[in-house]
Amino acid sequence: MPRVLQAMAGARHGGAEAFFTRLAPALHRAGLDQEVVIRRDRARADTLRDAGLRPHELAFGGPLDLLTPLRLRMLASSYRPDLVLTWMNRATTRMPAGPWQHVARLGGYYDLRYYRRCDHLVGNTPDIVRHIVAGGWPVDRAHYIPNFVDSRPGAAVARPTLATPPGAPVLVALGRLHPNKAFDTLIHALALVPEAVLWLAGDGPERQRLEDLAVATGTAARVRFLGWRNDTADIIAAADLLVSPSRHEPLGNVILEGWAQRRPVVATQSAGARHLLDDGHTGLLCPVDDAPALAGAIRTVLGDADLASRLAAAGAAACHASFSERAVVDAWLDLFRRITAERSCAP
Image 1 (cartoon, rainbow, N blue to C red):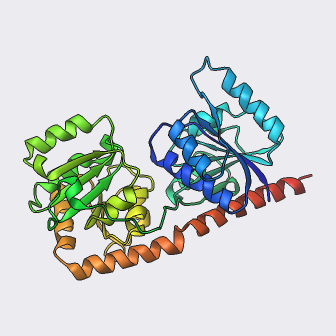
Image 2: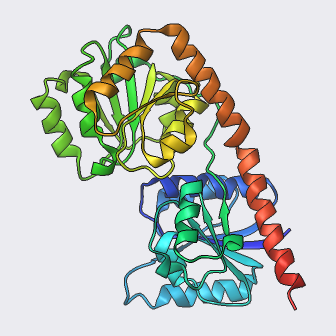
Image 3: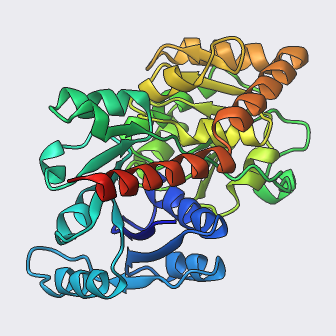
């Protein structure tokens, strides 16, 4: 099996960062020989150590940080990987060239100039792969491998611990509080579903504006701003419905998380949701930035227990078939083997 050096220099919170902390341990469990390098982050390092890995923590600072590239080169020269896998722009540009294949993983529509020294690129949606190819990348070096989520059943949190009446319909939404996530549209929709309570798990620059909006729309008493949570499976398991209201969403990890916990999903027609959801079968889709339509879809699911059950079951089946840990890890290992074999056969 190939030797792989992974590097992630992301922020403390984020979708790519969360998936990295799932994929690296999963590859370790599958027997991959790997070293992992991360931007200094005690919680992330502890998570990786608990999974049996030995993360190397580097600064990954600005242009004046000359030590990180030096230490990366020393580590790579010592470990002698067959290939390196870098995540997003910062780690990719800091990784030195060497006698290894350089693979970069893209979870968004990034500027491809940061990846010109790479040998292969991996997008986690077909649309991102189309973006890569449209940017001039060779088709045979652009690959699609999706994400997976933890499919273990969550232990549903007790609703009273989140100041929620046991009988109230509960909507859950997760993500960075950023304009792209359109949580403002969701709050406007909540005003049209007066019996429901919204659990909003996440933090970010929009928090104060969203709190003010909840007051202005008369929904403040029914919105719980939970901040970043490490028990998202438990939060989702206790809810009646997962809502993904995004304006822009390349993948939509939260949809997979809802499916994994067998919860019905309502989402807007962002690129990721359109790719994942079979409207009316594995979830309900509605237009972006249309609060009345979003509210209508929410009311439809909350008012029809049979529909909610069918959507949840179909979503869980789709998650198991295409987005399970085994399927995704096997895809990565197959890619690593093919890249290594192609290189060894090169003249």
